[in-house]
Image (cartoon, rainbow over all chains, first blue to last red):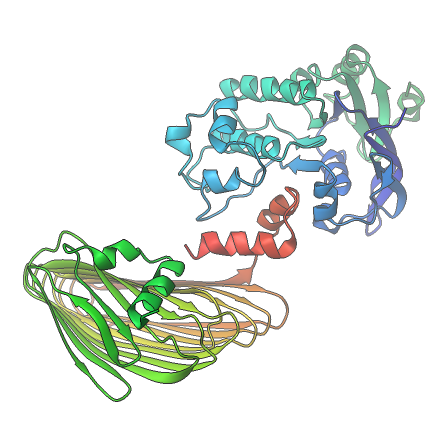
Length: 243
Length: 310
């Protein structure tokens, strides 16, 4: 069956440092695929590369979306094919209102705000700037993702730096995206977030260490990676355990 | 169509509130080149004018607190020409007024617009002047706003100049305000330069009275081969005077050029004047976020700039 997203043997280096090494993964429509790993394992680089951000281009390997090779497409072209991304630390837009920011798609901005638990009366005319709290900004970012009705939403650490109430809303919205038929690529280092996924890919030092069911990979992650000391080299015995 | 109707239509297209020009309770004046097409005075507002060969001399006197903004519409409908507006604004002691001014050159091919203003803000009085320019997208307009102002004790002046729609052409702003004790002044300029636009801005404040305060702000966005030079001058000459120069210029593309020169000075030991200036690029994360929502690079840059220059 054709995957929504297919990353095939992607490598990426910065100078002499290998950031991504032979990374392959698939994400399907109507599923939450979680990429989990401790900080600094290349998860955000992978997310940026899939979206085509920041000039990231694989030194080798290909990225396919809906069966088409998008490796050389611009960010805009990828977005117009149905892919979007929410950053770990969303951008601030001086002078741009929440209404304008959420009007990039066809959905009603007020309805989007209500969906992420924010009162439109209080937020619709506010600016998307530093006066919003981290939790408010994350919710608005998620609303912005929903506004363009993506086929694939790449969410980079959607739970970082926010309160528990915001986490519950974000988890619920991610599930809604799945229910609507979208694929979700969820980047996180949180076991709790990973548990909301349909399948999990574990990354370690730029490589896919393991992938499979939530129970299997999350258990492996919590048992082996949270206090990971594989600085500089992956234990090859762990790599062999990739299922 | 009558010229007045054409100006009103252009005014409305430029974002002006056309109904305000017809409201009997709202003061207004509409000028096309050297002709006053309409004028309305309201209690507390006197507008005197004299048409000249290439423009109009206008004296505006405010003698009480005006509840509604006064609408001013200056412009030229022809493609070519020269317009000189010699204006004088006198806000009498205790009076207050807000002016919304639109300068419209919708068909400009080669137009020179000179606005020489003298402003006197009386004791404990206030004036807000918001000036927005709308130029054609291709023509060459030379715009020279020149202002000399004086704010008496306890008075306030808030002036904002905005040119973000259409080609700037050549813009040469020269504003200078003397401030007496306890007065407040904010000068703000927002300009979007593109192609070969040339922008020169000088904003100067002399804080001569005790506890006078003022800021000279500029927000400039430049793309293509546009070029801008900003000079912000603030002098603190009295006890507890507080002044600030704030200049931000953002470049997009490799040929745009910007310079910023804050000139601050203090001649009283209890005065304080500060400055900040930044010249940078369009924020990459803002740009890429909008690209990831499907906007083209041009659409994304325009949205970011619209926010910055709002």
